[in-house]
Image (cartoon, rainbow, N blue to C red; front, top):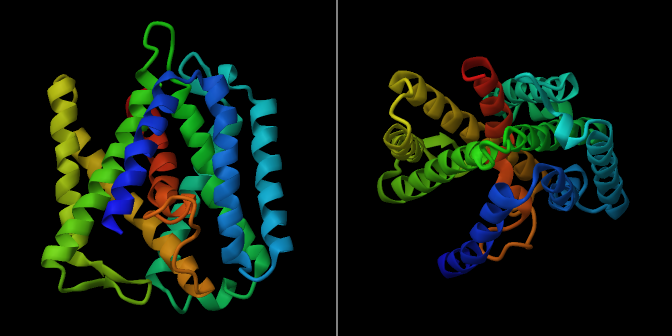
Length: 285
């Protein structure tokens, strides 16, 4: 399994980095749609893993919404005088509110599942709230690139990814080596408190990198934001685990050998990206 994960990462990471740094935002926004359609198809299994019609119906719905977003708010019109287009800002705000609700659903699981586990409507709505704000946040951050700073937006997207990857990796290895106390056994039996703390500690490597590259940043703010984004990413991971547990699904897909599906790889990012985007707008714009 570890060998497969490494092989997949070797070809996947350069592809991702090439897209976020060198693909113009207007092309990036369209290139993302097939990726999110695969994630939507995987979420369709959470809605009803036995019904292909339901899965494809949800996928088409996500596709139509993302295409509409790209058409009605072109990537080159996202930002004007330091302000994000109100449609995108609204979508990202709704996404952040969803993650606050999702956190409560995770905390109260399995009692909370009585409300939604048999409802296609609720699970479809949860999928839209998970995927669409993540897409909007990705495009919004990427759109901060300019002729004067062509890699700035890509750097912000990469920064969030690095925080998530560092947190996930630290949690995995700390959990393997030190994990004794279950974090939320009803949601994800493999996750431990020690793993979470290890992940948060590992995220501080990102803080060191930021302060080394950009020492003018306020250290306290960078530490708080990094820790908060790392915690939010853990909520995204736990949320998907909760939905997969109810649907009796181990991996969302098999498209990425050793990693599962697209949804398995972006679950933490679906929460971290909208929240980071709002924090960035509030403190750095």
